[in-house]
Length: 132
Image (cartoon, rainbow, N blue to C red):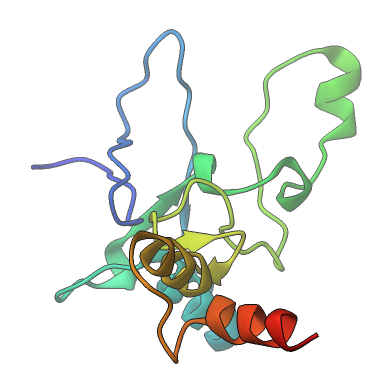
């Protein structure tokens, strides 16, 4: 489909503006380290090209944007600009929470549904408490 779609896995935001939603889309940074971090945050599988991809504003915090004091003072809309150090951190793939992989939480959820295993972080803690 033609148009601009967000590159973050499971995000369905695209360039069509609705009355209640107004997304901005940002190209991947040229700095290789930040580009690598953005690619990791997208959690995409398969082949895709970051050169032609964009990430929508829903994945950035307000602190990630450069403040436009003139626009704020005059109460006018202005084009949003990201800081050069901005990294997507909001509304990411379900396996990513607060920038960290959700592996620990998944292990804990799995172990609570069955008996504790040797690789479960809670089983080691439980056995230490029993020894006290």
